[in-house]
Length: 365
Ligand SMILES: *Cc1c(COP(=O)(O)O)cnc(C)c1O
Image 1 (cartoon, rainbow, N blue to C red):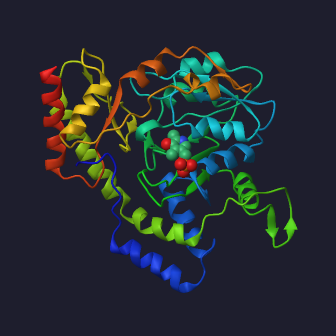
Image 2: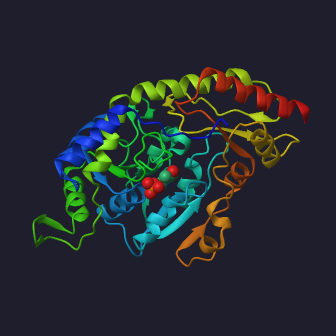
Image 3: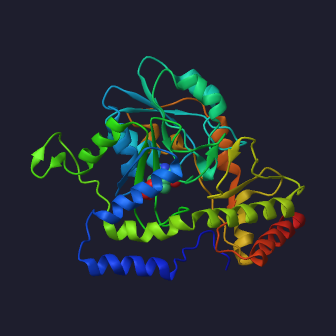
């Protein structure tokens, strides 16, 4: 079976974890600090604050910039649910807006139309590893409200020379077990704002600056040194891993080009994709779920990210603090998307098998 995601960590990770285990210092310490320094380099920011997962990173960033009850935050309707859950966790309202079916990212025109007096932040999601359309988004948003980037799937992606995580007031990343950098659970917030970084460090640690000196009402958002030890060696060879994902993506595109009813992911100028997912759309006669099933039968894994836009779930549609604009792009994306294996653990033969399987399924109708 060629799997849609695959975690293979090397002996460098084993050694790094063992060193922490033997040090006897398991909680947040020097390895977390080292990770923060390295990650800030990847994101091109002055500061990075590690936390216990990506959802926490979003909640902390939103709280850190003062988002709370009475505020409205603009979120794409087509994303992983954590983006919306994080806003609701702060007490603020969610405004769901449309995405574009070509890049699966938030539609800047929909954002412009949704912004009003209560809009307190906009959260573009760099979905599948591709930066959102910041050319159009920044002029609409930047001088009015802060941008909090959901970069959970896009470590190292670049927009016009600027890494994601450095484009808004804060960038939020996840190290969940299926992301491009993995630790099972983990997250990090990046920012150039020294006051925000300082506030996040205090908020993360029960509101303490010094032991038992409570500055603010805080939380326990801390990452452990064990988690940081899993991540640090991966960061050192992350460029190589992304290069492999890019090779696989090019090979998929070359092999699948021209198949009827198949829309390949767009390579958008100015945006460097890190291929967390290689996501096609099936718009012809053959339906997406049938294709996924047939791929599975011949040993090719695939994934539907995501099967429905958020507003279609009753718990969001009926939520008193969620308001959804019309989102035909999100519905279209959800009905037609299919992610194919693209991860760094694949061989060239694996990629060719994916191409051959999909070609034969679509050819057979
Ligand atoms: C994974 C993910 C998150 C949440 O990260 P966790 O570490 O799982 O909490 C948030 N947003 C998006 C788009 C994600 O893919």
